Structure formats: C-alpha cells, structure tokens
Image 1: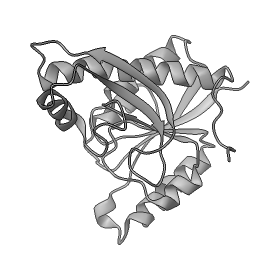
Image 2: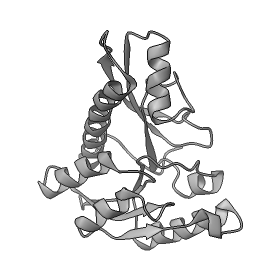
Image 3: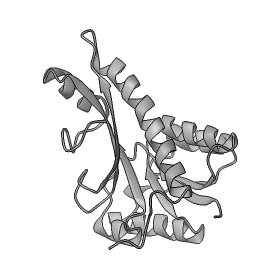
Image 4: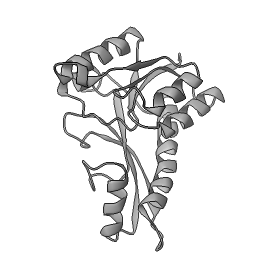
Length: 201
C-alpha cells in the first residue's frame, strides 16, 4: 500500500502535528504530510511545517466575501495534492457542509473531552469546565467531522484520571499527550487496513 497522503488544517501551534511529523521521519508511520494549511498567516503550525520542508498554504478568510470561497481554495489545494485524509489540529473555523461533502469520511478532528460531553467548547475552556464539574476523568476524542459540530462518528477515545491538584493547564498537558497517541495509532490503523476512510455509506 502506498504512503497515506495527509493534509493538516490548523490555526495555532500545531503541537500534535509535531508528533506526527516525528513519527513519519522515524519511519514509524507509512504516511506523508502533503500540505499544512491555516487561516492565520502567523500561526506557528505553518512555521513548524516549513522547518520540515512541508508545503504550506494560508487562506485569509477575512479577504474573501464568504466562507465557502476560502474553503474552495483549500479544497482545490487538497485535491491538487491528492489528499486522502484531512486532519484538523487546532483549526478554529467550523467547516461548512460543502467542505464536509468534498471529503466525506476523510476529515478527522481531535476534541479535548470525552464526547458527547463538552461538545462545542475549545481548548482551556473545556478543561476548566471539566474541573468545575468535579469530573473524575477526562480525555480526548478522535472523530470524523460531520455537518454537526463534534457529532461525527467516534474513531477513538482515550481517558486520563483527574488528580486532586489538577489545573486546566496541567489537564491540557495530559490530554494533549493522549491526542498525539490517538492520531498516531489511528493513522497507523488506516495504513494497516484496520480503519477504512472514504467511500463509506
């Protein structure tokens, strides 16, 4: 089976991306990152990609009349590079039904909670809410992206116990490690034929 062609959309630092890049460079994953795209020109995820010779693209949503125009530019770039799997890593835009349709069953997002709990919230806000509710455990959910936010098919969940002294920052750090593990395990499962992407009903 040829290398899995992956594209990444991100708006922030791209810490999870680094784990994927490292695994590919160590030949632990039979995959290639063909593009890293962002809606923010100063997003560090773009610098992270450039350091490893990965093509980048910035689409400024603010300069376009409507969101679909921005997504059309991204879809064109992804199609040109024969992208098979799209990963959302800290991407701060909600994809429209148009984008979801173009890559149906080929878009994955990682959410920093055990969905369906805390759907629709982001980053530290999720972890702060988890602690306010005195949850005993938290974790992350890797899921397919659908037209409804954080409601697509769950691919994988990983859990972590919450310590008595936990803060939103320490919980984020724990969960982020699980996010990286989830991405690496799930990508490997695709390349080994254990998870199928695309062409599903």
